[in-house]
Amino acid sequence: MDVGGVKYATCIVASEGYGYNDKFEAGVVIYTGEGGNVISKDEKRTEDQKMVKGNLALANSMRHKTEVRVVRGLERSDGKGKRYVYDGLYLVDKYWLEKGVSGKSMYKFKLCKIPGQPR
Image (cartoon, one colour):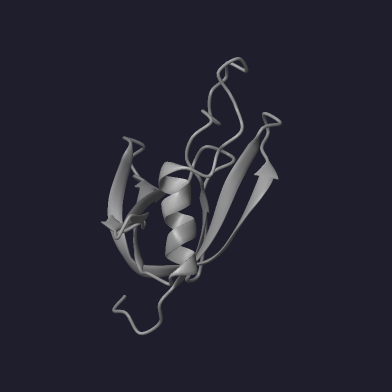
């Protein structure tokens, strides 16, 4: 979402299962940023993530304390793909840059669930 020339994140889809990707704890999501083809097996296509697009929108949402909707992609019990569930409103608590398994830099965002929401 663009407000006065500043882009904010309004929703993310967080999905466990890539080995490096998103992690869920009670009321906390560690979300891997976008870009860099970090799941590519082709090292020539893998590059450091940059603070642009969705990563910049999440960083702006943290700075301005705007809510982000989180949708979780969960593995189905029958093994036939994922199902997606709305998990509620979160605030971005912090973000950092770390090296992934490919040796390239990736952004991680810690989002905390806003208390008092229905389960």
